[in-house]
Length: 58
Image (cartoon, rainbow, N blue to C red; front, side, top):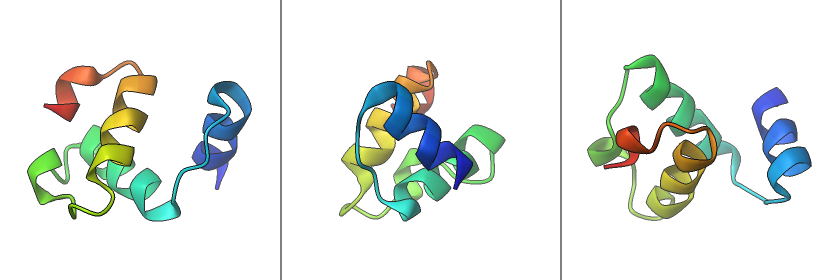
């Protein structure tokens, strides 16, 4: 995925595909952080912070 590549390239972090998908859905307004499974919630929060939308991670 393009977003995963961008995150790995610019932020040097390995993230799961599902975390990227959930972060994308949150940015688009389709999901909230409360709907993210606990297993990947921290990764999703970090992705949102890295994308400079930390308010969506709260």
